[in-house]
Image (cartoon, rainbow, N blue to C red; front, side, top):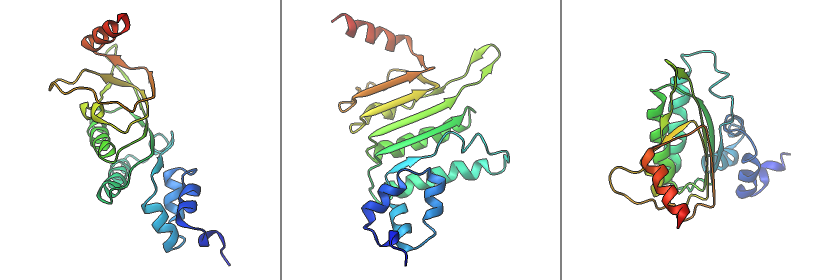
Length: 189
């Protein structure tokens, strides 16, 4: 008898939250209750090696689309995403996916966002993926951990609404000059 599968769904989700997304998705094949727990899982940890260990470049588009489908499903079901963690090698075309994912995560009231884009050096300069402006509208965001992004002030005049932000970790980021001036003025007040 499988006693673990008889546990309430919130406990199964808690168990799945400790696994990488790849392993949690595999667990969903065990039974309908595990599938249900996986489909409503709000802790999505893709780990550091999902995209780095994939030697078959043909699988990469499927992985990128898979992440999009997972987030879109949570958005359509109105599931708040508690935590999202992912490391992605830099490639300009992949920034499109990052922008799409961040839009979906903000719509899913993301609480903790951990994104790392491994940067490359091209013709003597470091390439960074521009952080989408929608992140400044993430009202529920408590923890933001970014690595390898270019951060600019919103150009459309929107204000930063990161009212719930409690922790900000920036590593290997490029800050816009205007943003640096704003923070310098705020620090003197």
